[in-house]
Length: 190
Image (cartoon, rainbow, N blue to C red; front, side, top):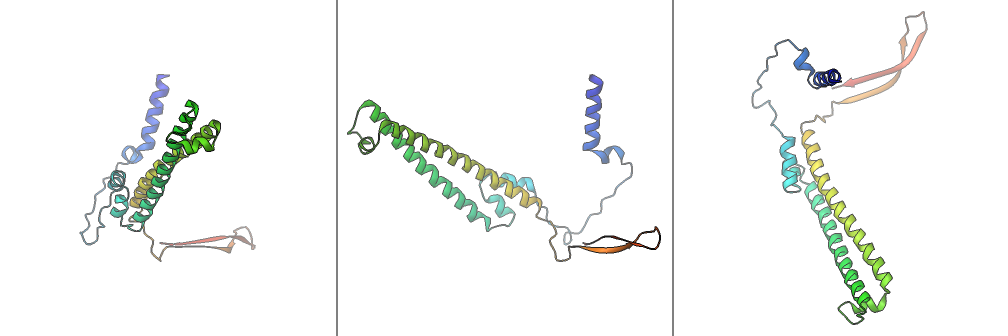
């Protein structure tokens, strides 16, 4: 069993670092002048910035238009959390007053309007909505970080007009007699 573990570890190391194991040639790095070299753009820095302050990673990536979208999402989520918390606490207090038999307390209007079972159902409904709102806010925060990370990775991606791919049917010589064979011609231009 130990030999199997050692073999598995060696296999994973070979897959993880093939150039280090199989490459024996000497590679020299050519230093480019500052005018040609692109400014270094760090995905790690964008991730950390966006995690510390949502939207800061997008500013680092120069995607300024995304910042209002991020904060609008947080504003909507904050509204839902606040509203659901308010209703949850109101129905919870009204339910407690209803169970205690207090019909003229602070939440007397709810106690007089609804039965204790209705108050309990409403409390659970708003509790569930509050939990979903908190989860969606956490998801929105995670998406903000993920967006900054992906944008930083694609910051230097070439999207010029010279990138094309063309697929068209073609007749190709078959090599087996005089009949041409049908096929697909793929043209890539970088």
